[in-house]
Length: 219
Image 1 (spheres, one colour):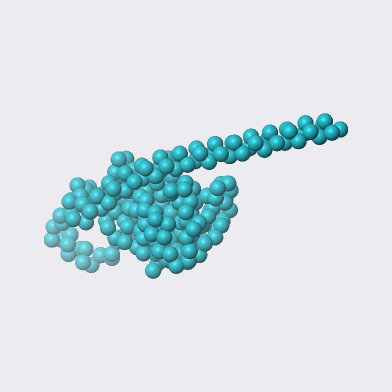
Image 2 (image 1 turned 45 degrees about the vertical axis):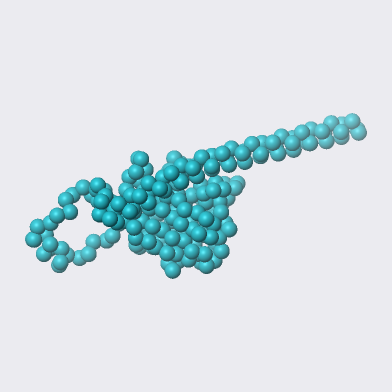
């Protein structure tokens, strides 16, 4: 009986050791991927900022919305524009190195500054923050990011009152204040989009089953 107990004990210890080793390997892989993604985002944000500066200075080679139509208008068009209802502003998107950028996000409290691309995909999430829903004009904008240590993992450290700044590709800036923090089930898409929040930031928890969610209002 004692021998069987000892064998069982050794088996359990071995399983425990294997789980620890596997956990360490997974953590190491996650850190490596996170560092690689962060290095790429650092390179890309320089290009994003340079492009924003060119657009603000009127030196961009194309309209930031992607519209290649001539900016010139004849007199009749100008007269018509005076009486026409104002068009809804759309988020300007500029493609750099094949990536469609909306701008970049700055969160001083966690020393974060990263580019934001215009849609969500596994490829984009690997390296950037992604616009999941909405825009800064109508409110309800949702931005997702990977749970890497140097990307969006630190949003769980944010406090109510911390500031978040979104800079769009035409240089317009939107300042937000963190107003609420919650954890949502991974399948809770409707809950993620619920409420009258101006901006929502989210990332998966380490286990991946839930979403760490930061709600913001315009400052």
